[in-house]
Image (cartoon, rainbow, N blue to C red; front, side):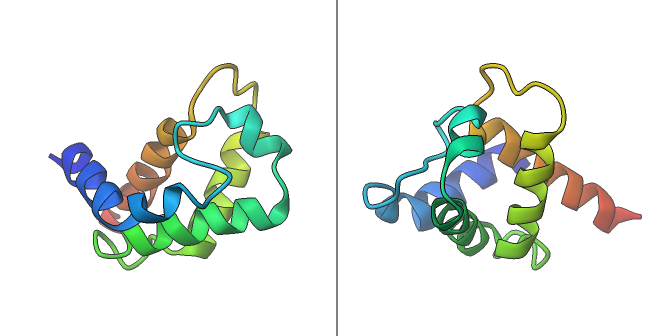
Length: 98
């Protein structure tokens, strides 16, 4: 249910600006690792706008921190950003239940 809601929220709120953005959730984590700070902040801003309706803790700053940690820990291999975003959403949701 959460997975479907997340995708719906993203496409409703985030999809219109994807064409203008350099990073998208279908990019590989390696692309995020090599992207400029401005592109990373742009992606995190769009994610924060899309997901803040799901939970107030899912802000731009949260996504910046979470994606940085996810990308810099271990070998991202061929994982896509949407998988990292799902992990970030799940981690924030889990932290809120404690």
